[in-house]
Structures are given as structure tokens and as C-alpha cells.
Image (cartoon, rainbow, N blue to C red; front, side, top):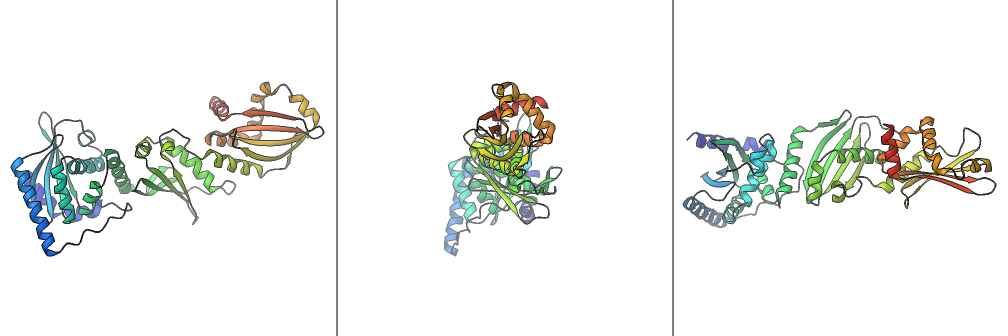
Length: 388
């Protein structure tokens, strides 16, 4: 009797609950079918016959076992009893949104005859209440969940538990927005639709006019993605992650998409070639520039996609070439130390973040002879890691 009264209380307050939990920003729902009076009557009679069959059969399914509780013109109530802890609902009691979505997903996808019942409930525009329980040494009430018709239809459209988890995460994040990601970065909105998971991030940090906004977001997003294991689920769903970035005081936004392979760690979480071109352009703004020792000129910068390196080009005196010729290997570490000493540590850090290497190319002013020192992306990453 106690549980039945709680069901009635939930049913009477369902409209209020639905306003708090209806998804926002996901795929537009198809409108409910327009039913004539006779069609609606026939569908409701069909539903009643299925419910009578369910009552006759009794609790159905396993983990969860589903039992009919009550129904009126606008709602259906049922219980879902989990007999083991081998379920998302029983294992994640503290993650309310995930438990809530999983409970309805389990109920609506478990048994064919019940799938038909949920389909008719959805077409009639009805809402659902589920009481999820776990039967251990003693029956434990996990949670009561109320779902409006829109939420019911969205969850019924999900194809698997991974999609249910992603959908639940989107719902949970919406309750927290605007949510701080770090001191100056905030998540402002989230949506999940047709294998596209979209996050809007807003930065309150001052925009750096010397760095492309797109490049800045590429670096920021890379660390954001690599530090979040949730995106492995997004990738496993063959879903694309879209991050839309905005900066305080600017109307412009930057939109970047990340393929499943990038989210799964199979490919870099950054467009390496694009980042390399941006870095070459940014550092190349200082060129041409005479070298401090007056041995030549730093003429320009370029990006070599075949080697994945930013190239710094120098035209120097023949003596400078002779000083390095044959000693390229020994000179590699001292050259990097010179770059760091000349306030180049931030530049090298950006190279490693973009997974791009560095190449120094000298050419003699008089003879045209060339000397090259190359740091592969891995060499540069290892060197910068040792410096830390």
C-alpha cells in the first residue's frame, strides 16, 4: 500500500517533474501521430488487452523483472526489480540521471511483448513511472522515476546501452550548466543527436591576438578530450564530438569536429597538419630577423607535412655552416637549449602539444651548401618531458 500511494503521488506531480527533466537541444521529436477518435479507442483497447495478458503472466523478464502496477488515461506505472548488482541501475546509485535513463531503457528494450506495450503507450501520448528495486538480502528501493512522453520516446529510440549512457550524460550535464571546466573555461550547453555530441565551451580568458583563435581552441580541446575517459564511449558509439568555442567579448565562435578514431586515441586529438601550419605562420611573423651573433638571417618559417615538422629557415655565412657540418647529432641538444634560453620554451611547448616536430635548416649565403637538424615529434616530446 505504501508503494502504491507513492505511485499516486508521483503521477499527480508528473507534469512538474517532466518540466525539470525534459531533454533540451537533442534531435527534434517527430510529432505524435494524429489519431481519430476510433483509432485512439482501438489502440487503447489493444493496450488494455496487452496489459491484461501481462497481469495474467505476472512479473516478466530477468534483471530487471518487470511488473505492472497501475494505469489511467495518461500514465502507466510499473516496477523493475533487479535481482543482481550486474546492472547499471544497481551499480551506479549515485548517478541519478544514468540510473534513470537505464531503468527505462532496460524496461522498454527487454521483452518483445512489453516493447509493444511501450510503443502503444508512446503513440497514445502517455507518460511512465518506474519504481526500480534491487533484491539483495532484503529488497532495497533504488529510485522512483517519472518520464514524460517525450523522454519516453527518446529513450525508446536509443539503440544500445552506450547510447543510453551518452544520452544520460547529456541530461546530467544540462542540470549543471554553466559548469566550470577550469578557472576560465565553462561548459554552457550540450546536445546529442544522430551520432553527433555537441558541447559549447565558453572562455573568460583574454583573447591573445598573436595566436589564431582556432589554433588556441585546437590545443585547449586536445587536453580536454585526452583527459576525459567519457569520450571513449562517444567514440565507441561511432559518434562525432563537436566542440563550439566562444571567448568573452567576441561574437565569433570556433567549431571543431573530432572523429571517433580521435576520441578512442587511435589518432591524435588534433589536426596535426593544420596546427603545424598555424605554428609556422605565428612564429614566422617575426621574420626576417638578424641572428644575435651576426652570422646571418632567420628568413622565414614553413611547415613540412611529410615530416610533421615546423621548419625554421636561415641564410648564414659559410663559416657558420662549417661550424655545424658533421656535428649535427652533437648539436641537437645544445640547439634546443639555446631556443629555450632565447624565450622559446613556450613555442616548443606548443609544438609538443600539437604533436609537431622542429627542423632547423641553414643555407650558406655564398655557396648554397645546406645543413639540417631535425627533431621528430617524439624526440621533441621526450626532450620537453625530461625538462619538466
